[in-house]
Length: 381
Ligand SMILES: Nc1ncnc2c1ncn2[C@@H]1O[C@H](COP(=O)(O)OS(=O)(=O)O)[C@@H](OP(=O)(O)O)[C@H]1O
Ligand SMILES: [Mg+2]
Ligand SMILES: [Mg+2]
Ligand SMILES: [Mg+2]
Image 1 (cartoon, protein in one colour):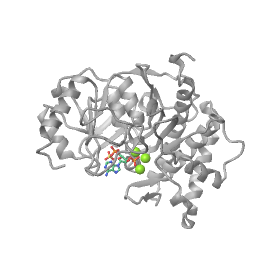
Image 2 (image 1 turned 90 degrees about the vertical axis):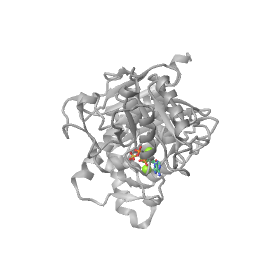
Image 3 (image 1 turned 90 degrees about the horizontal axis):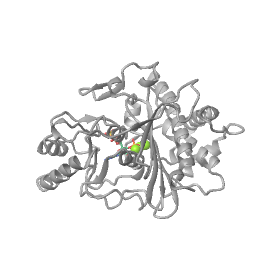
């Protein structure tokens, strides 16, 4: 197979699957926001999880196994089936089973096959449990964050579905579905005070106002964006895909940096110090989820910085898809020491030096690394 066609089949499959998963999430988010429900649960670390997280994981797992039959499909993903398997979780499990079957019944619209008959509870639990691979340096591993930014999802705000493929420890493709991130930034209602970054109308009618799916294949030098496939729209490959590129801005005073919304996930006062020391003047764009990676890849912002509290270990599914998309769009992603992220060492980004810095170009990147170096000793991280 020619190098340029390598992973073409896998990318095509992953893009279709992510479109489907985004549609599932939109339905669940609408229901969640319109009913005062108890459908948001807390995990052991107090982070939220919903029917959408489990349902996307089950659907993606089933579809990958179905289409890559014969291969021993290895998936590294965020959720497990423990809570759902408990005897008091029958209603929750039933809701997941319904949601997955509703989603898979739509598969032909995306050029995929539905199951011959609706999946049963045990098949769905099995599909979730199968995603317990720990990745590593050898072989192929799919990396899935079924709902990234679950907090944004339950707030009715930004979230993403992220699917990537690693082969022999290297990222080879990434797909990022952003259901509330319109094709054009101008269509986003960005409110600094309320930290809300939502499409301007709640039920947009124009496809450019709807969400997007971005994707890239390692080494292609290209990153693509498509409008989200909706309702009765037919999936036409490559469905108005357009190339995206990082921003050309390299003057810090004109650059925008993004960071997590929650102080608990990244040290806002440290990043504010960094920003001012390198001459960034604009307010930070605080957005939930890997939409931050999407924003850099398509030139809506120039910098993404995340410094988690010391002791927190970043997981590969929170970054994999975003990193390959930014890099192919012309950007740079490293840790705070300037080294590339290592996706080969299991579930965590082992060896990560302090934080993550994604940038539209080398000039800004060097300035931030320099600013981190200069301010680290005086910081209280
Ligand atoms: N303590 C701590 N520090 C750093 N990061 C953490 C922490 N706890 C969780 N996470 C991971 O952060 C993911 C969400 O990141 P965001 O950038 O969307 O955060 S924020 O909601 O905008 O604040 C979130 O992803 P999801 O669980 O998929 O939502 C987590 O994997
Ligand atoms: Mg995540
Ligand atoms: Mg998640
Ligand atoms: Mg989570």
